[in-house]
Length: 212
Image (cartoon, rainbow, N blue to C red):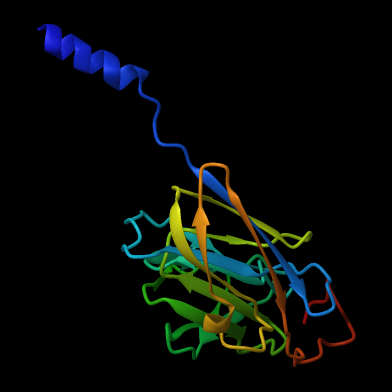
């Protein structure tokens, strides 16, 4: 009985393993802070822990995908609710996930399952300027940079291979990878990315709020 009580006391008094914060900053070549970059950390020498992906959504609002860039974990189901007064036809020809949601209003009855890591470019077959990106991560440890170019990941202490992706990244994603030891005090990384020019279809002059 004494041993059981002692074991319980040790369990109560021993603090749980603390997480560590990886602070990342992403800039372009000129030093400007870059939003919508995906920072991914994969444990080195071990498989990432299993996680339960959440249900996610990408809306169509004012004839645009919202958000335009979405990061999810492989195994996540994504719905595509149409909030506009016109119908959309959402599709992708990308290798990690090819799908087609024929012309619809409201929300399609079934979400789309993204179970293969990679980048999926989505479009609307009716409104050519509508382009979005879904980054499907093979690791549960990822975050997107905000308007200040900052992304923060909570990680168990350990060694990680960290990489970054952006829709306009000029080099292969693998070329951005770095190895870093993340301790309880946290760690910091910064990237300067070479970006390619964005080629997009011009939206009609009627602009936002039109009925097109």
